[in-house]
Length: 177
Image (cartoon, rainbow, N blue to C red; front, side, top):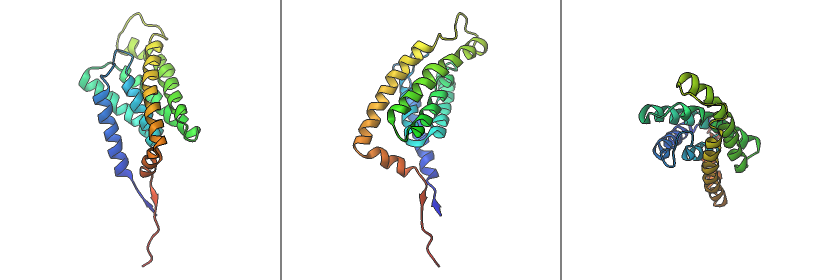
């Protein structure tokens, strides 16, 4: 029988979303939000790709509704968050792989996907397919560097594996009646 840590995962997800919304204005200019990448990578390493994707979607939607931010909040975050978690899992726990996933997912894929969204949905003129690539890559490099340093310190202190293990479901032995 498994003891589910579903509630703990939901609380952790809610904390990541709240933190992401609150710290996102730091160093933010259109197309560059380094603190969002810090949250994406940290959530991906702690909780995996599905939760990181969900976290990025929730933060993006809240930021768009409350702060009036354009759809870049979504297009720039969801690909990086998901790839960060996927790369971390595929590399069997390499933090640098999570950072590279964020850089590729957001800095390249998210930036290119942002062109049609901003041109056809948001109505911005004069953009090219690679218009957002430089600012997205700069943002991911800044946020990714901070996340890399933070997660490496947590790993060195032994806290990273404790946090990850606390979020997993636990096998329990059933007591015989």
